[in-house]
Image (cartoon, rainbow, N blue to C red; front, side, top):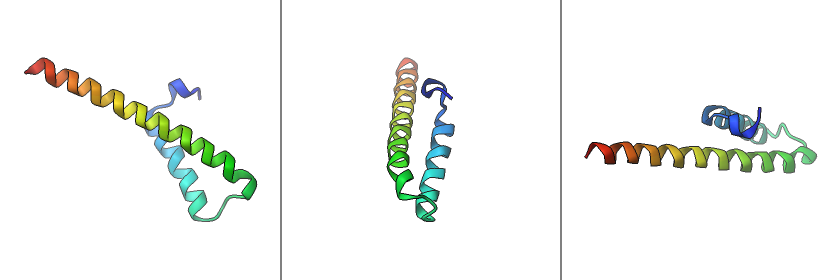
Length: 65
């Protein structure tokens, strides 16, 4: 799925899977770097989507005042 089409929920769920693998030590050293990089990308996506949502909510609230 292209990054632009990834929903917050999808990104968060994928992030949780990566964390679970790491917690269970169910990841090889070779995969570790790749998974940390992916987790970083997913965190960025989640932050951007939350920031965008916050801005939209604030805009709506501002219009109602």
